[in-house]
Length: 397
Ligand SMILES: *Cc1c(COP(=O)(O)O)cnc(C)c1O
Image (tube, rainbow, N blue to C red):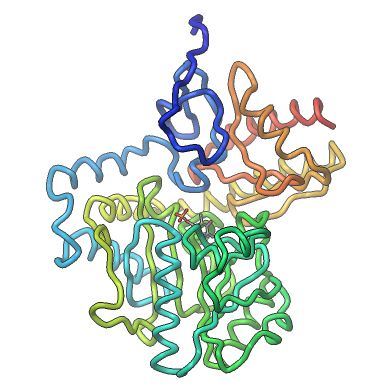
């Protein structure tokens, strides 16, 4: 620990984002350790990916055991973990069929293709999918086009056509965009990158009823909000609705590349040649997915996520009162603190660079902070995180 900080030579790594001059080397639970031995309390968890924290023993065991047995027989064959995870997901949701992918964007591409295919069969000429301002669906060309992120309409223009944008929680804005060409509406139950904005209960219920009455599919992108993050296994379950299609990513693999496209029997209309992928449903990743979902479904686990979400909520509200901030919002362990001024980026940096221990948080918009800790974060770690924030807010407000 007395050694001077090592410099990082990463000239061969393609530049896509500014990174701090450290290398992350180890992780355990809610803590990450860099090459200088500095510890960080991790409330990012790989952008809501490591739902069971770093170094989860069940996941490691599943990965090791499956690696020894069979890594990839090719997607042309069934394998045991592929079937096991499909069964687990369909038994615990309103969906009947599962297609595995490797990233959230790829799962969403699959959802878009499935909806367009369903349109060809059931509503000739319909291909448009209504999405929402400030939504985020991934970084492939089609999912960037589906996203409502400012600036993305011109970056890499021309866009993939067919994604008119409505406003979240405004059913009239959806109705105005509906034409004979409309095949689906796609939304995040809680907009994550957009700043942790939940869809309200009446909007979601009314949207489901409206889409059903007009033969329009409802697609929920639960890449960020699914897999226990909001306190139920899937976020749509808060609303008492049943969507036609759902996508999962991030948490489903607990950190390994795994994603899924789920659909009801009525909608799952792919025929051979329509969809595929070299790594789709590979046993190495789906074996990890089984371990993750089984841990999320263990008795009491999701209740503990709800309780921890409440604790985080009350701690953030206390900070908001103390420093005269704009409150907090979110669901379960996907929450945001509204700062009321553009100090998010500054706080993220101060938190990370703090000594002796750093804190990892994120600011998807300059006037708020987002928190997505491991779902098994301890009460103590939540209080510790808020203690560090208190210290930093004193410096900046
Ligand atoms: C992260 C995210 C995606 C994209 O997932 P990748 O695995 O990065 O491709 C899609 N939708 C939502 C809601 C996300 O949060």
